Image (cartoon, rainbow, N blue to C red; front, side, top):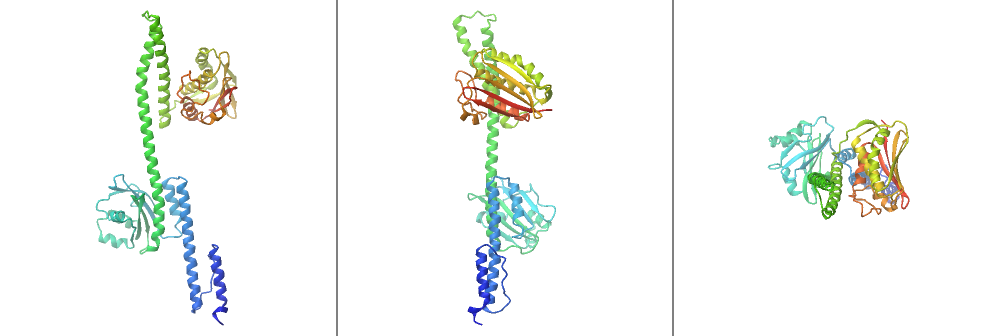
Length: 454
């Protein structure tokens, strides 16, 4: 029988077509010692190699997707450990990062199948005099396939001693580089001698490259958090230092306007009135800035107490009515619930009510009512502040609760920082509630918040 008529050739052709389609499970007849049998052996090995590379690329794509999704570094490392265990040899993976000045190396994450870690998270060693410096200088990975022998030749290597104590016999160390800058190392380790070869390097370096991206994102995120914390701290300190002198200015202006032992000429009174008004507006601004810095820094603390929401609203009503009386607006309470017991901070609850009622009064015309309504709704208590004022333009509703999101209904004659509603929403959320608005331009607005029943 000629080679051209050998049935194995057609089998091999079909196998090649199947591999082209991603099917690597075709079994080939390879027992013969002739040239066609050798071809079958080579095709079988090629299929196994391509299948292995296919799975490696698939796992790499999964790691890339995890990185792009913004998950935490520890989660990505765990995913790498689980994803590649069937494809490449390791019993342990470790991650170590350099300090900002590059002088110290610290273990950041590690996971092993061999039991307790001797070289655990937090272990640190100086880079000066370390053999790892060569890896950073060259940017090339290092394979050590006999760690006990390496330790015997380098008895002062504390990290090698610890890793050998864990049962590790081979290691492959990959540098972590971000934009060409060294940031740390990724260590693959095996309990077997001679576990690593050059064929593993490309895949391991690809994994290291992806992890370097995660590390860099985490570093930038931490820097952003620190800058944000610094900003909030500065804002709080500045606002706190401004409040005391403003309170003094307002108090003296009030005393002088009330003719306390001083007979002021009319021109002086006219000059004092804008001073008093400006100081009040500035105090509102400073208080809002203080609250905003507390909220944004996560330092807002609530003095939670068990209280009857209905009774609390009734007690707060005279103050709220005074806010309306100054503009000729009636503020009234409508109770559609019996005892409404909640856990709340009385001061912050009053602040929430004053912000919402103050806004409703501000944008209502004299003679228009503002109604505070409280009712039970599905195991929660719903408080609504309803006005029939100018309403809010629809396109402004999505940004209304954002800091400085004041919207188109702002009256330039009314003092406002643009922080009040943002702070109010965060106060309600801190109580386990939700704040939202329903409004049509020209027909008024209803701000609602709910609180969980105690």
